[in-house]
Length: 267
Length: 267
DNA sequence: CAAATAAGTTTGTGAATAACAAACAGGCCA
DNA sequence: TGGCCTGTTTGTTATTCACAAACTTATTTG
Image (cartoon, rainbow over all chains, first blue to last red; front, side, top):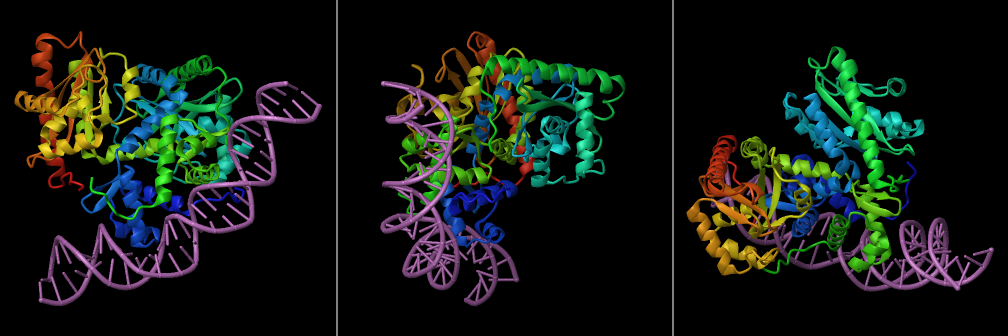
């Protein structure tokens, strides 16, 4: 937003770009990175050599990839979040009761990250879920994201839109600011968010935000499944009730366990 | 080992040290990092500002922590591994059949990383597991690790010992090179590795390595549980058979699905 | 209530260093 | 064998990072 004139380290930015490229490609050589990032081969080589020595990158043959260290880093971040440590068991139970996928999402810089996910007995195959979980989600693409946005003040929603836009994924995706604000208003009235194929066709979901008494938004949970199984009173009554109830239990548990500490804003 | 005289970037090393410290502490301020890493406050501040801009770090109040981006990075690494994509469902089934925890470990730079873990119905509480999963494991501390070491040539085992030592965790931990080589020899004769409280008392496990025809070691799987449940023929016959059988199924599946690509050595 | 403390942030400056080129080494294919 | 790819190494200079010290802001304390 504001042109942050904080002094920033070029070298660290370069390393970050290299790490990002490694995540995208999975397995890349020096030359390809050098071309893609417009850096000299020597520079790329030195960065990779350093990252390797530090254990963030490994070399397989003549190609480089992110190391397993990131698995542990990811778990550290997960376990550091009270929303995860508290919410996990509730999400497990929700998946069990509904027999569908249950999710736990948290927001960061206007994007959604899945902290946890549990598969119910009859849930659909997870190929898709496995894939999508490697990038953050646009908030307007999921029920959890919409539930979160519905809790944000208007100006913050505007900021998110300005930063990330409203990319289209299917013909059902909300792509205008007006339609989104409409949807968020409906969500607030309804008491829960609905997802109906905005990102992939054929799936539906119900999402509810997790907030505390001071209106701090911690994240959201959802239940999602094939549209064929999300119909009638199950879709309109039972699932929404279950999700809302679970969200409420998490909120209470979170309140007692974290008494005091709130997710401070970062501006 | 050999004093690698590859040109290395000081700035990247500093950033790595900061990231490591953030993982250890979870939530730290500038001054504390500055003291711990013996860097000027200004330097730490600039690194954190850059990492924040790049999305690797977030600021909560006056403290910094690793961002949720690492969750996705971790998942990318997981899903990039054929051992994970192929082995996951087998590990699920193993956990279901044995009613205990089942694990999937991979080795990197002489340490063990858990790619996956599934909890069986009657498995013990997971507080401990959740905790330990945030650092890599010493290979001599687990059944999976010992199964992997048993597949390595002697010289490679020596290298691992030289680099990481044989730290003690309980009174049962193997702490001498001789005892370890003995144990690995027994493991090879037995056909599977045994863990009996080397890292935490009261738990036992059986581990088997995953190798291909060319003796490339991909990793190992294990089943672990409370010692009270790991007794008699279940401990001596049934569980080992199940783990060995599962390992074999994974090996075959891996062979057909990756035909050709091997985990190249990185020296 | 002001002084003192301690945190994060900003800035000027010089010595360190990262990046570029261009050369080198090694494998592969024709 | 000779070209044409890689990844790796090296000499060099402008760039840039890190220090130190000042500044800001909030909290604590006599």
